[in-house]
Image (cartoon, rainbow, N blue to C red):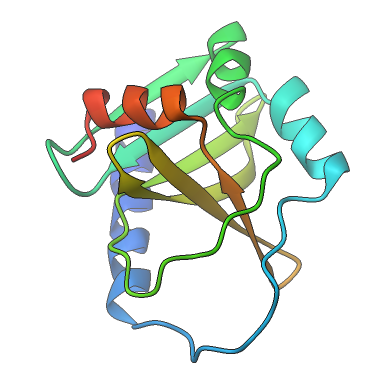
Length: 142
């Protein structure tokens, strides 16, 4: 019950953020998550919640080593953010029930996509592997 309420609250906040419009475009070189944050995301998170906004919709929750398996789909490779790309989903990584890092999911093709992260008022963009993008699309994305 508590997890369901949390997922609805997460989805509601994502919809509100999406309705606020995009930030003005500035010429800032995209960066991927800093190494220490990426390592914590990959090695230390214990739960992951995914809420799909487009496609079939729905949500997924992963725990334990499934979180590490999924997080291996998030590369350290930076990609350019696609202007006006629709938000396809949100992700929330947790450590022992406490929020660690949120991300926004975007699909850019049949087997490509990326996740944007905001941390310390900076935006980071990490590409998904082709397998990761395909996995997510089959589970609830477009």
